[in-house]
Image (tube, rainbow over all chains, first blue to last red; front, side, top):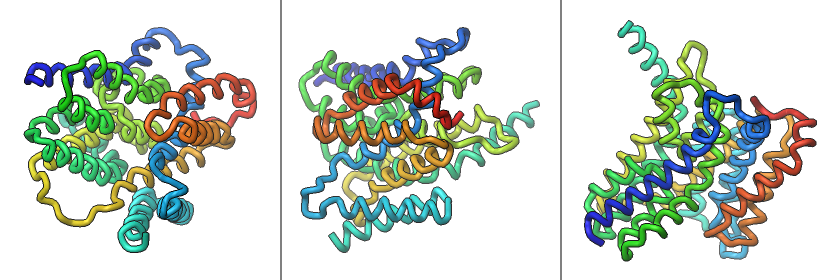
Length: 108
Length: 239
């Protein structure tokens, strides 16, 4: 690839990203009220999206592999327990991550 | 007047910073990894620096490295970019009303609407006395800078790092788990959370680990449309 072709390729990736981020805002302008169905989606989507992102993070876990997804399961359990107990976002995230790192470095 | 706006900005920056700390950890880890990957693939640090600033989307940037090392294929690059980034359409739909009426800041907020920024700006509420627009602006800006600096340092330092970071990428999973729980606490009924988890898990099983996100989004949209009446009747969605 020449430098120009590289610049164009990166530019296309910027364009594709901005397009997906901006499209909803372009379609539903500030001037007109947002349609009821889209308002409903706006409220119903977040919980579904966060569920999707959690599963997405685990996409490469192989339940039939050597560790059977146990480090991931224990790491998530630790995060959930910490968060139910202290309800401190940073504590739960740091604790869960530390637990997972120890598991994959020392145990599994 | 100038003093007053300065105070507004500093208060918003102070309020936003703690929310972005987990993202600092995950972006520096992933950003470093990305910069190092570009470095060992033979690119100067200018590439991760410019790409992290302009694309600002982790998964696509990794794929772009492969594109840059292949023959020039602009149409394929566009299709791939749109497919990888399609989930952002959902973020925009969910943030339509929150990002309303914020003037010039809105353009930057929309440009920087990545997974992590969306998660915080969607769930966190600016504290009493803190300007909502500036709060969300700084969440976006800090995340943007974490990613940019991480990627650039990775591109510069290359393979000098030696400490064992195996498993640090779990910080992202842990963060989404916590945000999922926070959203769960905010809602009285959890139908849509179940739909999200079940649709994604099912599509991951059917379509494999590399191409399940778009079918997942279609399934979620269909389920939310199909069950709109019962979901709205049950109520309990957060505002």
